[in-house]
Image 1 (tube, one colour):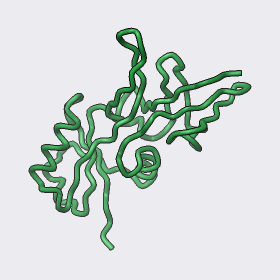
Image 2 (tube, helix red, strand yellow):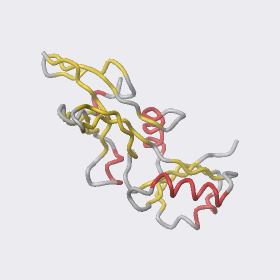
Image 3 (tube, rainbow, N blue to C red):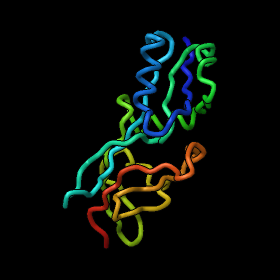
Length: 158
């Protein structure tokens, strides 16, 4: 059995999807596949809330590879350790997409009732109820100063 290794590769912020697609075109996706992980968040404009998708890690795309030699071209690559990989797989699933989570706060304790943050309540460091985002306490913070945020709508608080 061949080990598949994940890498985070630095790229220009805002160009993550395009850079991943270009990588896949150049390498024909044989031993190495590039992708981005997106997350859903709510944004208010034109007087109402809209669901939008953004890269989970701004300025990075990911590579899944069986061969480390492919990475000679990706100079700004950082190997993802098994704990980080497991966490990203739990959040993003097979589609590499983190949908909005929903939950409530009761007596100061957050309970996520649906979405990928279910079971990860202990990793929620801060909730921005106005922006409907949760700041996660995880080792992925090393990739960006703003930390790792995921969509979380709190539907009630008591």
